[in-house]
View (cartoon, rainbow, N blue to C red):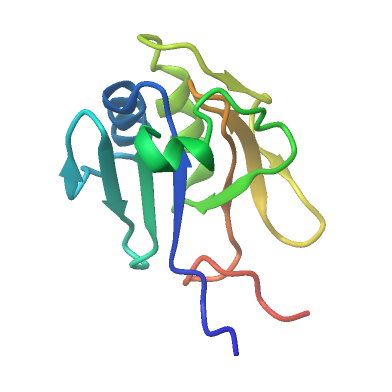
Length: 135
């Protein structure tokens, strides 16, 4: 039986670049990093990792794979502050969908496409723990 989602691991052709971007964009330092792998542990204990596929892992993962079919959700305390902070980063290419928008289910969010092409929905939730409340 499923208990929780614990982590996501994303392939990258440039682990140091995506590590710097993620750390600067979200104000969280990696708990481990080298040229091949980095990992972040969020306050919720969910882990976000980036790795460069080589050897056996390169048979299952491609750093240059299309990534436009999904988005990963990250909850922030203040989505407007996060948007302004991310917009101020210009050392690497990325895209945002525009300023945060309010949604009928109670969240306020914007979409971010990071330098590797990963899609992230950056959201502020109406609940203190960052999760959507039961309707």
